[in-house]
Length: 68
Image 1 (tube, rainbow, N blue to C red):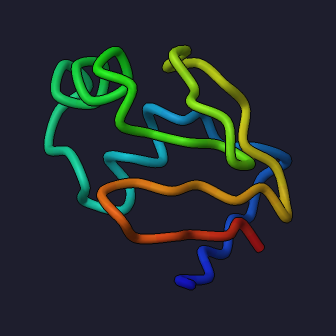
Image 2: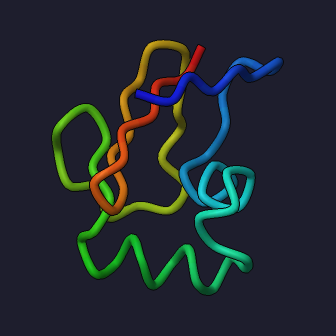
């Protein structure tokens, strides 16, 4: 599990995917999310604007991340 520290109240799912260099652009992030390849707290998430807060768990391409 990869721990991801953030210094704000939340980060959106699209921003998170770019921040972690999983996607290079917002368009790539949107496509990845719409294909159902991203889970937040063990549920497939289809909204790019989903707010991720501390202790949320994100799973992408078999890698698990936790917001700290």
